[in-house]
Image 1: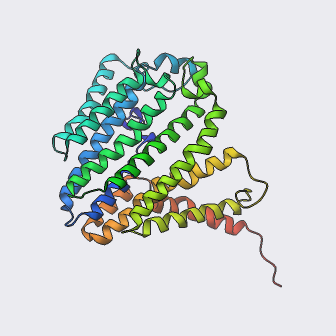
Image 2: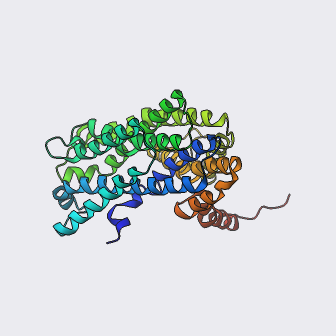
Image 3: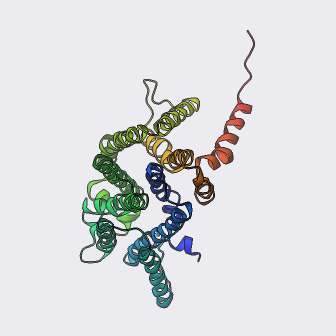
Length: 350
């Protein structure tokens, strides 16, 4: 089994890591003078290795105590059926990946505190006897903290120290609040999707306790609006020095809304609104999540390269390592547009 599959990299490599990279590029763009490219690339490589280790440990440890429930529900499990020695070797590997890079990475006491908290939450989330994942709202809170809030805060602190950049307290507060709400939205959406399997396995989650419909209403009426407003506030803060980023988000949103209308989805301009689940999906995935992962890092990368042209190599590496808007544009969006253009009925001349 490939290490990428074993560590469930498809869940975080092209979804969470690019968001952290966008923040890294923002910080580096503020550095005067910018750190040497070689030093930045070395730090970034070590940081990504550590991120792989932490994410891998979190998934493995969670599945270690979910074997029985996953077997009963038919869900995939990373550790079920694996030989104990191979499993132990895998745990040792991810722990080495997670912690050894910090021997050379820029750190502060706050970074070490956050890393310890993240590691502790991984354990408390799944460990029998505590098992926060089955203790109502504590489960989503813990997941939102270790999967988004702490990881983004650590990325910000590490590269702010590398670039000797002082991040304003208000910006850090907005970022932390946005990441936390984003994390809550992610885990509750995931629990709604898994509610049937969790109930079949006898697992108690927030959604199985309170029902998917009340949870959906929380997502629709509270978390998604809060996430959007906090992200807009974050974009406005970035836009003071880099207006291309909020302008890019507005253009992206307008393009996505226009595409929805073109596909005859009756939202949001007409009185007969589409189903609530579709509207939530549209904002959740199409507008916000796709912008976070595809264009947010690219726009901040443009700002970085314009201010510090020596970082062009970093831009090329991003295009190679991560799914991004440019690749999706030429691989998916442009062919889709040309296909629909050819299929459109010809207009009659007056």
